Length: 179
Image 1: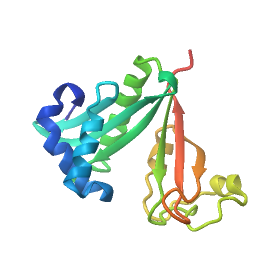
Image 2 (image 1 turned 90 degrees about the horizontal axis):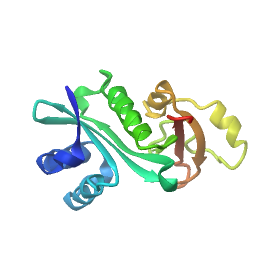
Image 3 (image 1 turned 90 degrees about the vertical axis):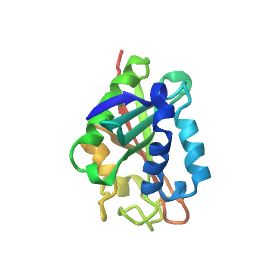
């Protein structure tokens, strides 16, 4: 397995990027949505790294500079279902963090939606005792927030009802440079 800069080799991998997005995220089921996302991922101002097995793209991670380049939004991380739970997501994340640090940023943040009642934050009134609920969060059905916690990220906030009533977005962040 190799990790490559997809922005430099994007044309070669466009169709595989679309397939990976479409097989993982419902919001990219239409070819048009997937194509637009791929074009955004290949923006030269961004970071886009791919995990390849030979000529096959099996993972993808992207980042968007924000706050004048001091912070990068991790948008998105996806591993083909046949390669999950083998450490490839963590490896992609580590290489991404190095790249963000090289670009002079201090922090990476991301939002991890809970659209399918996968955490104890779903279907709660998060305007009441929010931080107590965050402190006692439970993973009910394989939500990815635990993956990020295991990789050194911290829950820094929650947007209640981001995906509809009772469907929050969980914000996580990690400092990658302190000087």
